[in-house]
Length: 227
Image (cartoon, rainbow, N blue to C red; front, side, top):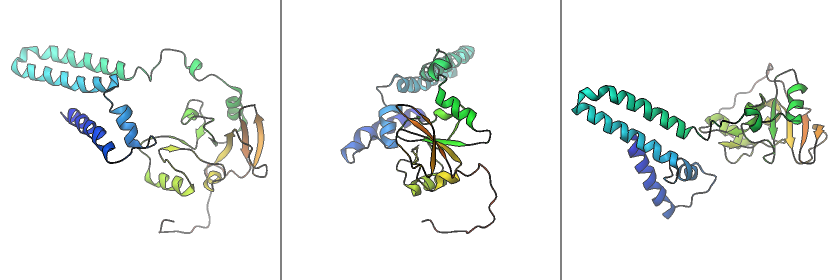
């Protein structure tokens, strides 16, 4: 019942909110209405049909308790069907190497450093969260929800959409966050960054001022007000 009520409320909002406000494609609301809670998506329909079928089976068992073993089997079948349908796009049957092939640029980053380091990219050259696949710590990413304090830091640097973070090399906290390598299609300041790899499409720079992952601080100042 909770699932059904949630979908009914979201559906109502989907068709009423646009009458009063314009939803920007970059907002969470637009994403919810167009993808997660869209009746055009088969996955949405399955998510509603499964609890309805389970509820009907439960009501039948209340009337005829002898059918309880059948309800157990029904719940297992419904669970498997829902997992298979919803997870179909996230669990492909092709080899992982065909999706994320070994490339020279990634190989250079993996072998360049022995100490922990982070990377970042500009212009969408290195898609969000891809670093995890290759074992590279990536400063940006796509994540919902976002921790409030980290969101505040990101926005204070000049960031716009906090759940889809795209950092810029010139921001003050880039050095403090252990960003040693920047992947960019643009030329960066040679005084701050050393060019270590280049192709026709992108370049990899090493940050001269990157701080280590862990370090000691001997002089601090506590600021209570946000700026």
